[in-house]
Image (tube, rainbow, N blue to C red; front, top):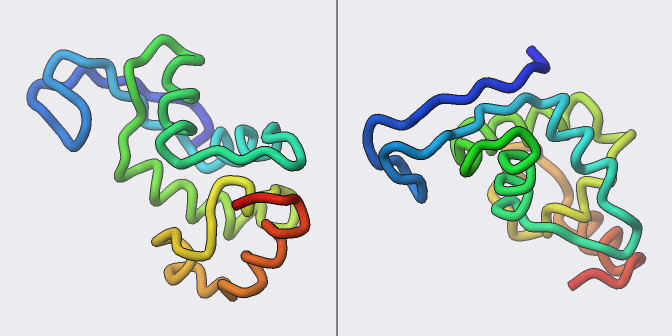
Length: 114
């Protein structure tokens, strides 16, 4: 499923308010986003959520599905995407993916991140 879904929230959810448009993205869209982060630059998950939402006119992205899809994007496209520009060794997804925190720290240091 690589198409975006937008829902209007009926009640407050996480950092979104009732009435806001919430994007439910996809692993493919997240992988595309990560590929576009230039070398030596970094983004946060929160920045990614807002950027993806703005692209299609939503207010924000769902934090739950974004976390799940981030994990899937790294699992499916990890060799093709510079995910270390989005996550550091302390990001919650690191444990779920069984990534080596030291390897992640090394990749970030190579680009002068942190």
